[in-house]
Length: 493
Length: 127
Image 1 (cartoon, chains in turn yellow, blue):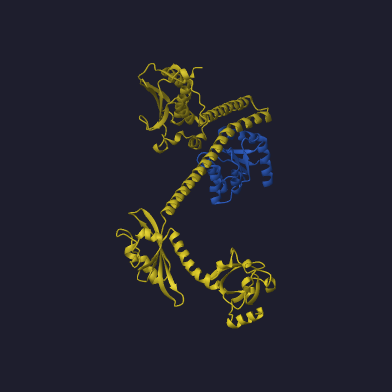
Image 2 (cartoon, rainbow over the protein chains, first blue to last red):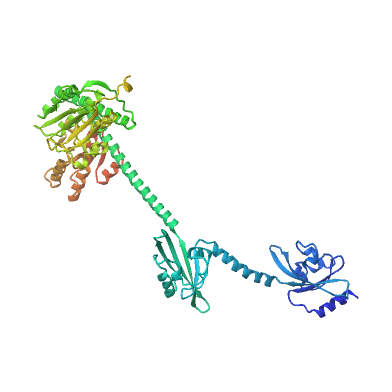
């Protein structure tokens, strides 16, 4: 029987619809006869395969045609710039009239992928819902739970969520209810989001209820209830806010420091430039006007001398202060009589006090007080405190110097009859910045750094200076406390 | 001769400036702080006194040089050109001084010769 007759016969017997084709292969597997959309199904021009290619060569990962009969195989069609997958169902056709093997090919791509896609989509969606950290419920309009995800089942109780009311299922009686949130969504058809704090569990949660509309009918079909635990997020936000506040505080402190530094630079500059201005001006005057009288000349030279000393003292004080700041104050203890030293200091200051008719009164029960301290520095402290007292006291007043000691420590108190220092300022008076801005100006003879430096030295000798309430006057009282003895060994060099 | 007001809380600087200016035959009035300075300059504003120039220290206890000029400007025009003297270390003072309508700004230490030159310059321009 001729092959063409077979083909005609098959064509008559089996009318072909779209997406179908049949083909016949010879005993070598070569496609020899065809009908229908073979070329589209195989993704190949007919001229390229008829009598040339085997059916098997079009099938991916198939060794024998027997494997794929009544199965769906996937064929890869490569076009110029795209690849598509075609699912083809292959059935064997028996035809005893010929020695050819007949196959019916049917394109089942649409039904296969369409069918599997829906199922897969549902599966993937469920899996996605179960993966997320939020508890998720689908509610009907009466608040009954239709669907829940894994997190919801873990939070609200596994099993039996379906059909239960959301109002009684997701909160314990002692916790804030979700009724209002759901009700609001039901009445407004808007997404409602509310944050709640569950005190008994110490958790912060955020509940959102979304209206799910039926777009065809335009009415509300169900609600999506979503609860997420935002405790961690809130804690982190709190932490960030706290850090931000700390940063802002630091910034303020830095600005203050910067301002203080500017103040300090201004003050030091002022203190250095002022005597320097006198020195420069008077020396230039002496050079420019050489014919001035002797008295004037002597006055000017005297001023230059005085201001040079002031500049030198200031520089020494500044260096002392710099040493103190770098922790490089070297205490050199020696054994001496403190009563003797205080007497010496007062004698040195008496001419200054006499000028203002100020009396210096030493009050002590001790005739001798042996101690081991840095004698020069103790002297510096006493002179500084008493000369400060002289500066601030009115004329015809007195300054008390009280000396007291026990086995452990010595106490020197200096009290003047000046305007005094308000209790609120008694700590600041030692701060070099405060000191500089308030006291440094207009105090010829003093650098204004004395109190700061005295305190640094007292502390270097493991003692202290405090500004305390006056006892005998209404003025200022400074109390120096020093140990009776510093270890000699460490510093005898 | 031009009449110059010199204001500084440092007596030596006041003394030196007054000496130099008097040596150059200028008439000099001195003030030891901001309050005194404000008083005499207000008198000048009222026409009771006449100054051709005022040297005004900035950093003084109580009223600063800035305060004095600010208060003067509240009432009326400045009565004479103002030259600020300063021993402060910061440069931003120059801007503030000039924004207050000062003629110039002289950092300490200064040379008396330069001061004399400045006075001659300002007063001859003013005349």
